Length: 317
Ligand SMILES: [Zn+2]
Ligand SMILES: [Zn+2]
Image 1 (cartoon, helix red, strand yellow):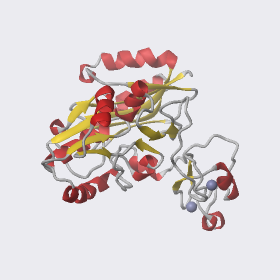
Image 2: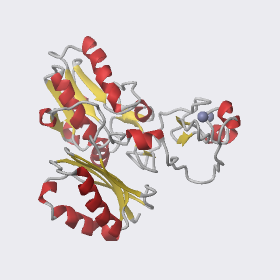
Image 3: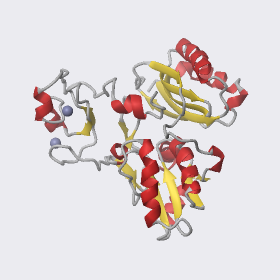
Image 4: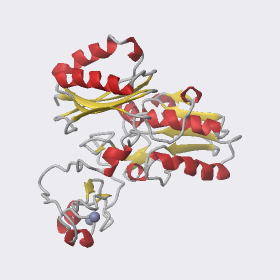
């Protein structure tokens, strides 16, 4: 495992996100880095891969810039970079919500240890909310969590309106989690604005929790926004809760429909995906532009994925 898959976000004032992106990109390119890094006025959100020989140089680069002080970097190891290219861009917002939030009004952090203890001792007034999209929670989530049926982060605005009708802000305690923590940073201020006083968020997200606690209280696997798509929290255990879109058998491999005009993201088992040549249904097999499907190669997301371009923690523009 020679490649470090690095994830971090950090809030600080970025004067010129585009200029910032340009210089960061130049440096990362010199280290042969690949991944997606977005700058916005409120800070940076990064997912990238570096060969282990370049890791120290990158650390040094961040360390030499005082704005990155206290940045919380998560690292996983993989045998190849799970990104096809290097994208570093300036954006309007790090997480697309279409409204301003007061980032300083967030919930209280819980470490993985505190989170685990709370899960084990929580009362009936405590609600655990999965702050990710429906296709992410479908293949893995904390036991007993509410999994909002939303396809984009923006939809959480409406979801919260409905949630509030059923859960009294005065008495309900909320615990939120997401992949790496950034979506909770944006969502917990919304919960507080909505009147919830007791809001807690998992620091470092499921990635950090998995590092420290394995898959305790976790069902299934973790969806990630790179070519790995799905990773286990505990590599030693087979833990599949997703099901094949066609036959409902246990499965958690994601495919993009091989019909490029459809491109739907769905879970399928190996038998069914071979039967449809990589398509989401027979309709797609026979209409439109269909890419060749090879069941023997490692599945990688199609480059122009809707989720890649629109949902990967970017503003979409
Ligand atoms: Zn199947
Ligand atoms: Zn399709």
